Length: 81
Image (cartoon, rainbow, N blue to C red; front, side, top):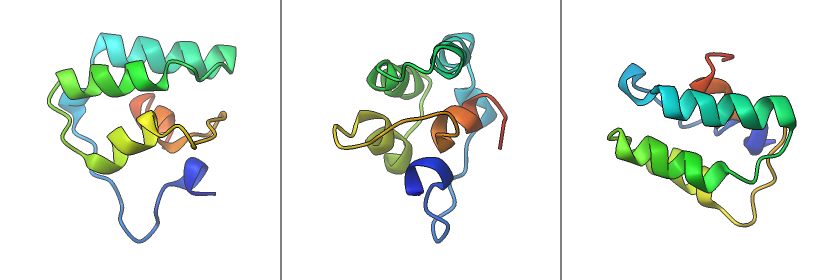
């Protein structure tokens, strides 16, 4: 459930500066294709913009994470919150 909703006890503050064309393009591609294999690349793109949020980066890079439509990180990048 946290893969979809995140951690309700630690809400994530997402800076609009992290929502670059690259991050949005990656997130949109994953959302539309339902192929979330680019999540580590999204983590890198967000980190390149200055994203220092460990919850976001760990979620994107976690090998044990299952990503589906509704993934909270993809949704926040796409403003589907």
